[in-house]
Image 1 (cartoon, rainbow, N blue to C red):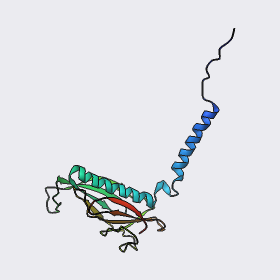
Image 2: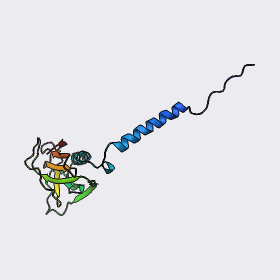
Image 3: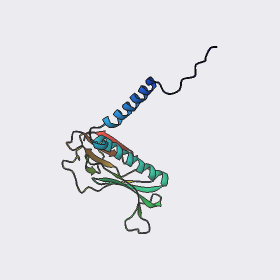
Length: 181
């Protein structure tokens, strides 16, 4: 009588090794991308600020309300005007107010130097700061039609080895991170 072999159960050594290699590759990617703590680099912060500003614009268009992104050396706060429409928000009109939507923190290890109302498309930028503004409060207002007040934000690492400017165009409200000042 011929015995039939039972199908093998379990995992082979080769399959186990493949899984371990895949996990090792993912771990190396996660921890080896940046040498600074928690991925705080000028590149990442410039990209995050660009994303925040583009979200602010998109919210203004989709909700038909003015939106403001307020940048300080440590935070980016998004506000929305409580009234819909193109009417310019007035500080004297107490019927409508600015409502806070979100707050993003700027990680330590990155310096937000300053903001300028000049839209610096190509470097070198004449309005680039030479000293970090520790009392910075800079606003970008986005209208319901997608346009903005425009301007430039300057970001770098502590040694100013990596310098980025985040540019917001006035007519389109679009935001882009650009290398160098």
